[in-house]
Length: 149
Image (cartoon, rainbow, N blue to C red; front, side):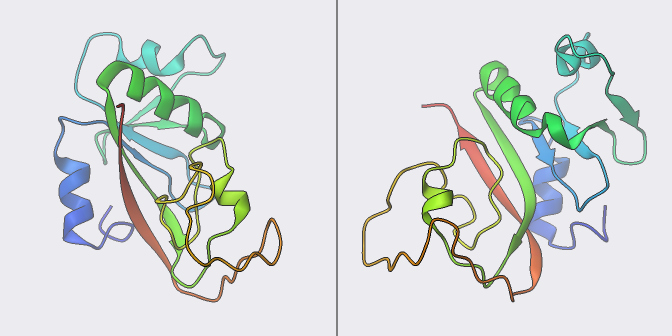
């Protein structure tokens, strides 16, 4: 984990244990999910899918396939009403209508999820195209705290 989450704040969020933390690592590594202990957590995460989450003792977290990312966030929000999502973003990447109009939770642009799925954020945006982005910046991990209103 230290090579993935070098920032002490991100480590503290990962270790806190009260609020689910979903950590989407660089490909091809599986997503890690930390949730408060409860009987049946594996089946709850599985959510009637064919494959089962695997326990990773090193990180004290469940490993799930990347394709489960959005659905596990939704599960966590339904059960716990909040969740932390840790994932990569590019520091220099610009926001775009593709982000503003997104329906899933995956966001890699420099807004770090602030504009994600919320419609046009207002202000003076110059829209070059639906997918305009600059990706020359350093790749880093960011964290979003999602809450159900």
